[in-house]
Image 1 (cartoon, rainbow, N blue to C red):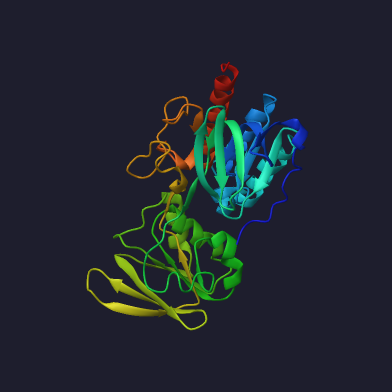
Image 2: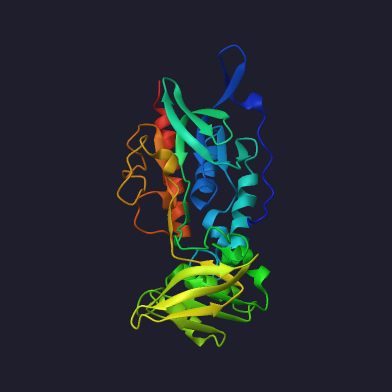
Length: 335
């Protein structure tokens, strides 16, 4: 489930240059296309708009992973704020630039980017095309899958990758959270008051998230932790009914009767559409230089999709501003 966010008013076609392809198709040419509506993408779009550049923001939603966070305690200016509330602030700021920013919400994402003599063409999943003089990639990350039996079969029927989004569906029910890092701990704390009980299935010998989050989880009476354990399969009928868990120390398999499974084992860069276009590292992250430029001149990148070491909301926003500043300088230097 996605956060419901009203999009800003879109810019008029007359505000951007247009080119005719063949005999019929007309494509608007923007100064820049920003791919991704998380903190990096929204910040980049705002910074470009402040330079009076015409921007197309392409995204499946607004907020990205930030909208899934429960309590955000380390974003400057807010001692405590939920991911949904912080995303709303971002959106309100974005809407102030509705004359410069066109928002296009995509259902099927981006297929590819190709370099043209005059800029870049972005092909969307629905087959439509958009063109710009420059591109900023801020597509973020997507949840990592376990690859076990029942995971795909029971997706949205008890299996979910977003506790913040789907937690209310499991009120007064027993659930399993697979994972032992910050994403798993955040998920447990965000739904602890809703659910009947929570079992964290952690593959290592101890939880490995931030100490303050570990302390909160261990203090919660309705949360138990199964360390050195692995989820083997998910079972059920029309919906999830159980999870088989193996203790890696004893080799013993246990069937847990649960109503839901939250998979929180991290995420992978949303970069499939970039393969063969820009340089990716071994983790499939976009490689950027200190100017946020990728291996293709005129294509910049920011946020969790890049090889920047820290994946934080405030870092993503900062990287989005850097990418936009460098992108605007690059555009200004073009003939």
